[in-house]
Image (cartoon, rainbow, N blue to C red):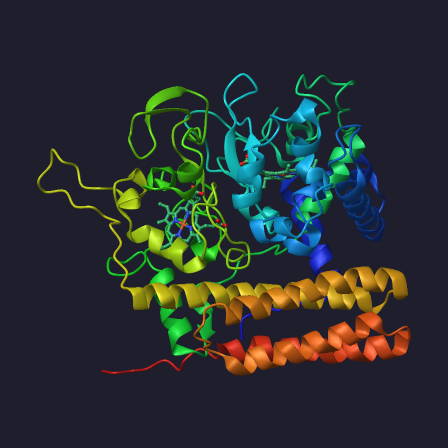
Length: 493
Ligand code: HEC
Ligand code: HEC
């Protein structure tokens, strides 16, 4: 059985720590700590500090915090359904209530599509509309391919890998986010409209963000699913052979890395070139998004006549985290995971460099990735993506339950609420495919959920702990039922 479910929070923390001490900048204090345990403690404290800043710090700005958009109980992202439940005085809607900030967002598009204005190409160029990415598994998704068009970026962050100012690192992304989303006025003057984060704050926020979600990739070639539909979905997804989905090339192990470079690359897959984009039907003048870089060009969008800035490449994303973070793509242009899979059947993708289309001047050439998936195959891939997403939700929910287990009532309740949100997500993605390949898993998850809810309301710690243990067990069983052992090797000759 593959080691999908890590229920041991210490192990997760340690993994995160190792990851950090290996390839990421961490604060000097952490490096200087005398021994492993001391480093571990400092690191734990740093994550806790980062979490507090993420949720509460406004950086003397307009009242927004990082969690205004990256909601902790919603996979650190936000979507139209979540937005519809917020009160009008939520700082997310500051552009509707503060005349000085009327142009900070496009309020209608924020409410309908969950899209945020982002000056990716600089504050002197038109802002583009982008969806809010989840911040999960960042440690596995931001190591960039050698260079992007001759420009070296430290980490590939943001939908086009160039969202971070300065050296382009995850750490400095925070500074850009403060300037972009949190100013008191659009003059964006430091010291007046906001204050910049300190070095310590940047360290803590980086540590917090890297602690979210998975810290390692799946090993899909050695995973076998009990449902033949899901198993077929895995085979169609994790392959580069013609006749399959050929998704592996850009989503190795359903992550964000190329199967050739083993790193996180940028590709032009033509998402912005789909006709009748819901966004442009609502606001005709929506600026085209040119993705990576800032060079002006005039061949963008469906008409191939619009102006945009960049080389039209976007950053490969992890898809383990996809199914419960709809809508999809950098502009939230499609609703469901099924439609996101079917995008790869589209003319927009087939004409894009990502598909390696045939060269019109070379009669011998063929389109290498003009993927064609029948609706049944789209369904199978989507059910596979739903299944691995549910497994990740179970892992995360159990991790949070374990953390809640040893806490007193108040912190226990806070952690439990997040754990419950993860169990709900697991149920939602497994039921949302309409066909339910593993009904028993769904039943067990419902049982786990009601135990978690009971634990949330009981004031007696011992009782809460018993309920949590049982909930963890149910979830573990639900997870295990999704998988099966590797088939015995056949010897047909
Ligand atoms: C008003 C909404 C909003 C707020 C507030 C906000 N973000 Fe974001 N965040 C976004 C959007 C939109 C993107 C996509 C930007 C891009 O494509 O470059 C993003 C992207 C990111 C990413 C890149 C993730 C990835 O997968 O590459 C990180 C990291 C991030 N935000 C951290 C933060 C931090 C830290 C704060 C607080 C200082 C913050 N954000 C505040 C909307 C927001
Ligand atoms: C040529 C590289 C490439 C191939 C092949 C590819 N993808 Fe992608 N994928 C990307 C890029 C780049 C993005 C981000 C695009 C954007 O937002 O504009 C993406 C985004 C996605 C998303 C949306 C994630 C989110 O959180 O919004 C899903 C789902 C997805 N891909 C699934 C698939 C599936 C299924 C296949 C195979 C049928 C596939 N991809 C093949 C490059 C690729």
